[in-house]
Length: 290
Image (tube, rainbow, N blue to C red; front, side):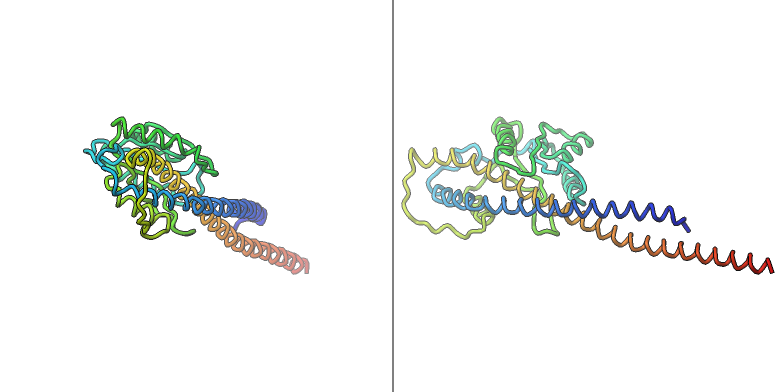
């Protein structure tokens, strides 16, 4: 049995750990709520964009827009969205498993330090990496979108796909591969966009007039969709990160509390054994003196 001094040291260490993990749990919970609110706040923008694109869908030739043209996939372009810090449970590890399943030629762009480190460690073709803060402002995401779009339009990559942790609820964040470019079917894309924004079928049958013409409006509008989509997915990834960290820290705190109880019981047993031993020694010495 360990000495009472060693057990006291362990109890003090576990108490400090429990205090730290509890504080991290509260911070993660606050950040998760802010990330969820930011994601919800972007939905009206998605709704309006879906309405405008639905009005355009029947008035344009989809084959004329470079973002809508399907081509032979020789090199995939993959955006990997991970965290900058650890202590968020299996979140990053699950994303890395998805990356390891990518066997076809691909070029990677990383958002988050953990993803950049993984791609460098596994010697994958990483052409850029970016850092996005917890605030996840649109201005922070815009360079990522511009870089990916330029690579796609220049022919350096033939697709734009996003691997990110999709936020389902506080306890579940699943790794998902989301294809983004090319937008091979505008009507399917509008349906998907409206589903993401939480709205139903577009029912406005008014005869709209577009200036200078519908094709030019579409040319200007689709890049905004790409911006919005990637920004929305990164917001979802941030919510997943803070949720996963909150759950991991709560689990660590609960484990520390349980361990503290076990150590306290062990300490009491060791102290009682020490007292009993001292009583026996005193009794034995008194008996010997007689």
